[in-house]
Image (tube, rainbow, N blue to C red; front, side, top):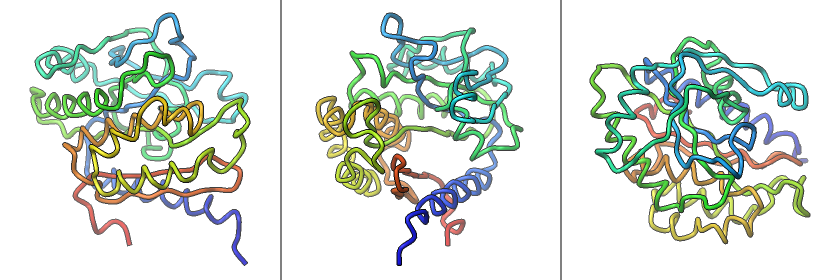
Length: 264
């Protein structure tokens, strides 16, 4: 008989495999792309794309640790890389906002604790707006991803740069579909199949604000995956998939790397 908890075990295994894949790339610095969940940026002041350049990044917020039992994460920021990205990006078509006063919430700390629990690498936090309308459209997320790739290629150092991002598929918070394994499993499967095949134009066509909100009222977090597709220059991921734990949000994973032998 199927074990309803098996997807949770499988998702933990996926995280471990992503950790191994990231380690195999031997990065010197991690650009971490995630979104603030109205903890410090709100409807009255929400930058579309922001780079944090303070010397340290730490989080999550105290209420997140109390409510969800999320572990803390405190890392040095690679300030030179952050400043160089800010200087180079306008030539690539992106004017990033920046901040020396920021906190990283669970969208940053959870994947960091799974993928780099050693806390031994400096990071560059990059915040995206997926919460406060008007949210940039999927096409813009893809273009910004491509611009980040070009910016990394032009950095005046020989540091190996890894990129770690979090996002999600269909999720409903505070609405009638909350509490399911996914608020729209069909959306999840369809979008992940297209991401896995590198179908950029189909993903952009499907990832409209209206379609995402119909699937769940915070589903636009999916746009961070569209950004990754741009950063990968439209190539299909080396590996991707999604799990559906019981009574939990779906857990997707994807990696673009040169480590095919890491997965069995």
